Image (cartoon, rainbow, N blue to C red; front, side, top):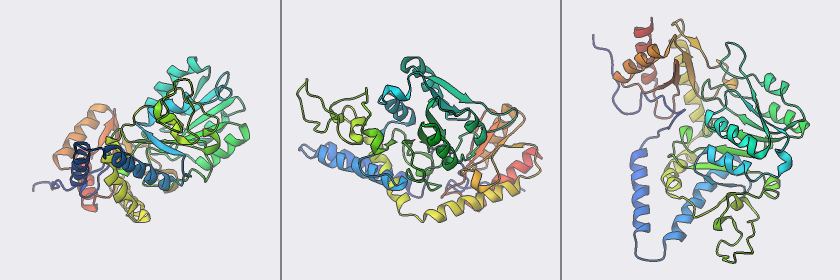
Length: 381
């Protein structure tokens, strides 16, 4: 009997921790780019009004998604660039001679950046380690290293290597007692789990429009709380950082009063325009239904692969997990071999060394889970 293979309809797509798909995405992007080409290629003067309006719509979708006040959200190429802009804007008292706290399971790109910035901005980078044999950093360990010497803590809402969900409310409450600034990287769960910048109130938020938001690369987001914006002076600045971008007096630069001070030169807009269809699609969905679909498929994965030879990395508890099921095999060669077998049957996932990551989303189906489970039982049993 020939093993069942899925058609290329997305039924076996388990990569929402990476890119994210929705029905009709390719056609929507093509239409958006055709619209951009028509506007940008027209021999008239309507380009900037139309394109900046679309960028504004992109920002508005993000603002509503995270409950941010007007004038507190702008675009960024990616989460690393967003963090760099924030660090380079803070008053020295928050960093110089103080600690910047991160967890050992943060997104590595952010840690790479902070390691390089620490000597320049005068802070010491404090990385909370994983316990021996653990798959993620425990919240109590973060709190144990978080004292009054921490000027800023960068929290990872959901880890990209375990899907463990941090208790942002408890961590932020502790941070307020310590007098620290608190920022949150929401990349791995934005668009799947509800998040508000006001509950609890955080100082800044960074994300991408990939993954559960189903957008395109280069369409990042930076949110900064209004009271923090007021005291920030971004070093990476340009004509779009001003209250009036068309002020050409070289000796009278003035920062914009809102988040626009975190803009710099002429904004990159193509990625935001290409992501707009996904943002519109997502806003039109029943958000509870999207999460319920993920939970039903994730539960089926957990049940179907139980008893196979692997180590479970993700928490089983929904309240402690993002949207992924992650397991660790004995070595990277075994993991790559299994991925190849899955791909042959129309199942798409990925790995980090021996870690396999499965993230079911809107286009994934229960039939896809069934083929995934059958393939894993066949090749691992």
